[in-house]
Length: 153
Image 1: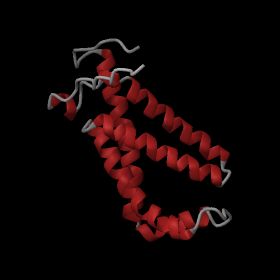
Image 2: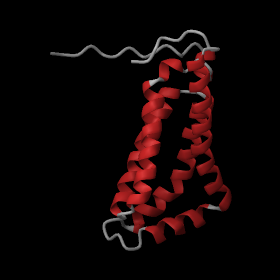
Image 3: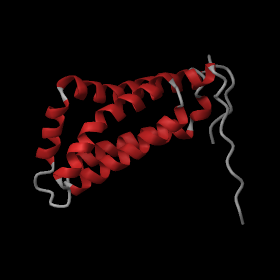
């Protein structure tokens, strides 16, 4: 279990803030670059990647490739600045899950391992969110951990 941290100057808060910022920047820039290069280029890339996957129809790929860069940009920005951190991290983890699904359909196991690294980073950031003291959430007083619902027996 993570240590209780209350000082934003602590090593834990600084490490978390720097890692969260860097990871968010990574996710955000994936989307920004895809948008800047033009959605048709990314759509064509996706169609090429899935051309030999019969269970992934182009009718699904085009809309997915059209919204993914915007989703990456928004999720990445929110993680980077620590705005709605918990929701952004959960959304990002689910986004990576969807990407892993597609990657496994393509049987690209090398990329699937890389995506697992992203999943681990999301896990770490969610698990250590109590260290999220250098963020917009903390500044707005929304840092407090969400209480878990009591278990029903």
